[in-house]
Length: 94
Image (cartoon, rainbow, N blue to C red; front, side, top):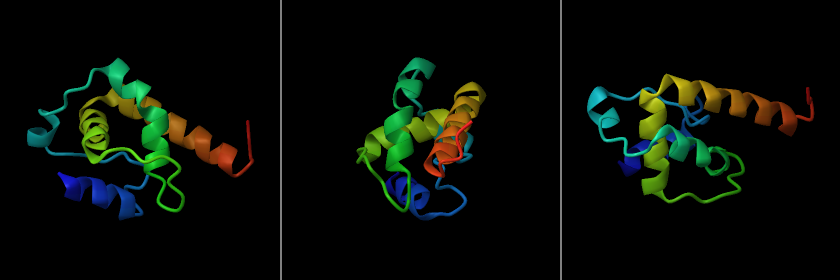
């Protein structure tokens, strides 16, 4: 499982922290939607490849990855958070 986290941190396609996973891995997701969403800020910061501002334990990161891999609602919300955060980081604001 550590390989998944290492991949997310290094892959240009997956650096947003949103990856599609196999059904076998998704079945292991122990988080509820509320628990997953509560981890979004830390997960976002931990998956920034150039400047991770937060360290997230691999086990915690994997829980979020598994949930995002199976929950369309959380994945959509997280992708919106990424977009807004990147706009803010570029100082483009809304």
